Length: 192
Image (cartoon, rainbow, N blue to C red; front, top):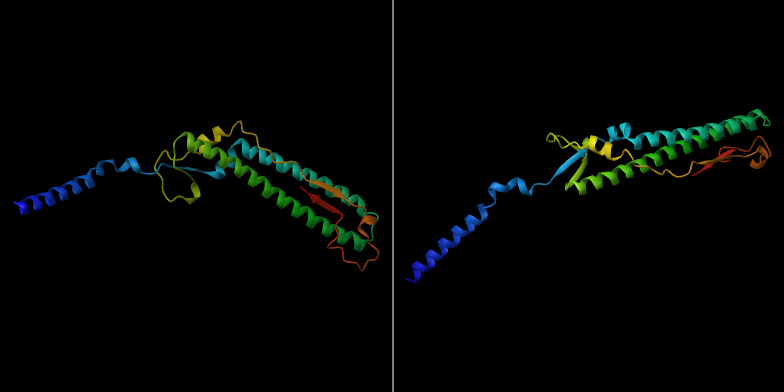
């Protein structure tokens, strides 16, 4: 009798384990991650964030062009060699400021987009928001680019102050001779 009860108990236990193991098979979709994606390039091109970034970059360009113009006025009092050296140094400095400011503007824009994507993810109970360039395939309806562009319509981004560019006089550069290399000494300096 003990053998029958023990074998029956083992059999019932095995059946229970199988039933419990199979009980969730019809609900596989409920535990899957909810993933959506965004086309960042489209957001930057079509959203208010992209327009604000473009305007900020144009404002920076205007400041740099004015600094270049102011520097050119100072070249008249210099020798030809000093003019060449100053132009080269000034162009290098202005280009470095331009590249750095553009990179900074893009970082600020992407941070604002990321913050809004997180707000969207939480409010729509999504698990992940991915960048479209990382996807090989996605189901229809997973693209939230248009929704995010609409969400960004009223968002204002603070890119900070424009760079301050000063033009130094040739006397300020401590130029005493045509033999002194000017690569390290620029008539234009930029600071953010």
